[in-house]
Length: 257
Image (cartoon, rainbow, N blue to C red; front, side):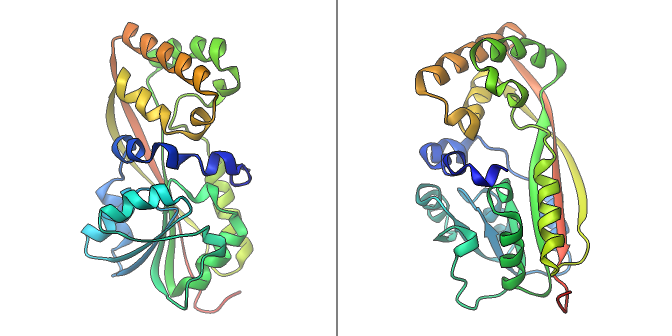
């Protein structure tokens, strides 16, 4: 499970500013759906640089963020987000309670059952837990251009090289943790589709923020990224990518099972 790989889980701070600039945001429709029943007090778990937390703050919510990496937290704090630095499973909530617990592109770094149990503790009865991820793949011609690059220079990444990917393990693990906690109603899954354009430079920048690439030895990473850029340029230089934002949500039971 990804949450056990702490080298990858805590690699993002080394590229915090780039992460904040290049990582995609989340659809307005998702934020509206999560706030449709009047949630105001929001806890954002694994907040990173505050990309999602800022959306809820801009919608008028009172937002508190929890982030394990102080370098990422500093970027979020510079946006005016209140951030506490801690692993969520051991975070001291000091009795504070929330209408909504969110986790954007981060819940797979949290131990599923421990995280779900902690989320239930800090949610008000009837409150909602919501984890969401951006998933997607470039068009087929970009796949075909990049597959031999990874096969040659980073074969260990070949099955997961076209970030963000469509791996569904993180969604399933989230559901299992919620169910095992006994504290939530059955999970709901919703999808929001949109598109984003990339050229070779912005795609390489995106790859620099992904943990499987970030933890490669520096020389190997630079050789790989140069070859990726050259392959995209040879395939036309830019592409439009469909993104599917998947939301896994569950309401805290009024009485624990």
